Image 1 (cartoon, rainbow, N blue to C red):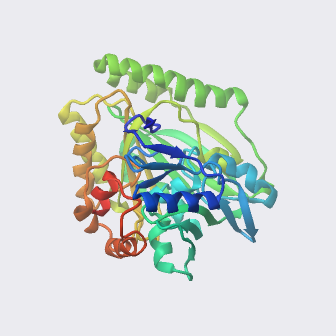
Image 2: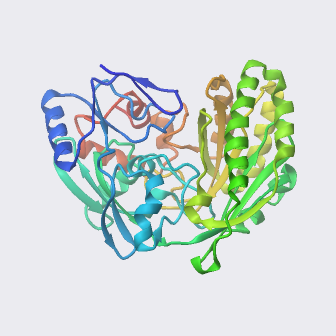
Image 3: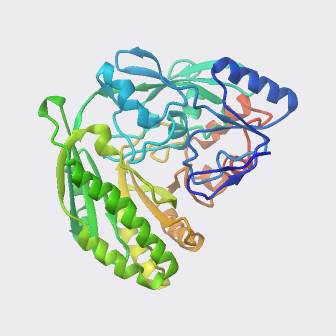
Length: 431
């Protein structure tokens, strides 16, 4: 056996082997052998999920070699499933295309991002899986199938956010848009008016999110407006982006997190100083450069989608909870929004949603904080992000996803022997 750890250092697995097939033919052969040997198989992307979704004591399949553009048909681009999001700008540039929306991290593979429900922010924009129009995957017995909204639509709906439970993805077709710019406006605001005017603020630009620093009254609001390429780039000077995104957001933040871990009593003071250091920034750059930013400080994360209207009350309750428990929380909360979509296992299925993400430095204890915040968010209709920490089981999740039973029925059809199962999937989907 060999050891494997995820990025957040929250999972340690010991697969019997880690395979890196060079093409789809080798994926087929691998799964055929695993079926004959009755070994379980788990696909893994970049290891950026905080849950043990990829962990296995069987065969772990890395898809890194299945990368790059396969086909382009108008705005629809077919990619190898192991393509990293960070490589997409260069791959799509010759075609004048871009992803419609992105999260704030680009280390994931395309397959991993859609399989766990990665999303960005914007009241009119859904997660990456909702941009998917076709999938190609290898089933448990080694058969290769294509699916879309018209070809095997039930499998398509289940596998778009499929947790790797329906097959090993080899190709993903995504509906892209013409390349565009984002005009970014980042500024601190008092938390109270951000919550009071949450609907107006999030409707005031195409992509809006805010961060709240516990133990302070300050939020950092990030608003991004979509522009055509003809508007022209006005990026941050290199010195400013290096200072803000590397020296402050990564270097200094890592140091203060480490200090807070050693001496928790100083965390409120550190957060108040950090909130005062947050400055206003306005710039215009390529969409992917604005959507994403480097994250070098390791952390653990829980994120829930709730009814959008409930955000002000939910954040106030979490703030009161932190004060009452006397916790010292160094990481800010991140709040984003998303449009409703029709992906069966999407956190935004059938409802406009808002996301509350809580983090802890990877050395800090997290369970008590996460479980207590989880209880607050469950009361507001919360649905947990599939790649981030939570404690729910399949019976609780069934009640929160209207098409949960339909997805399980597809699983019974394509993987009756549970070739792709592991303890995490047993918990969240059932054995």
